[in-house]
Length: 140
Image 1 (cartoon, rainbow, N blue to C red):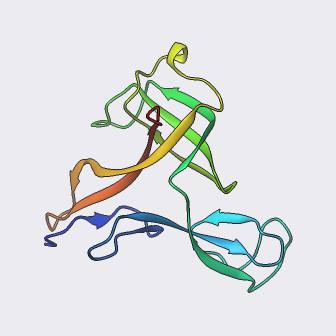
Image 2: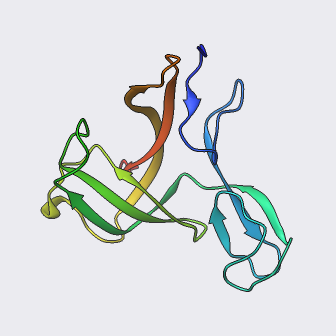
């Protein structure tokens, strides 16, 4: 069993002594950025032109769905969202810390990436996990 939580997905990085971050890959040919690792750009088709980048922790809500039915043990309703990060990378995740009601949600509303416990789940060895979520950006 690990003392520290483990990342729930391989593109979530937990540097020792540093803050968690999401890692993406950017095409040095056309500038398109993607979540996670890849060797071919989906936009321009360039091969072996991808470089590792740290993704920004801010963006805007592009689309969402309020989920009312899910697997047993998953609390509903929750908001499944697609967010366009400030660098143009589109990523999917859950929007938290806001009531799941369309009255509370606006397309293009500012959101931020936050890192938190992955729903309190543990694996067979007792390891806990950390995941990423979105939340409405606090007014500055």
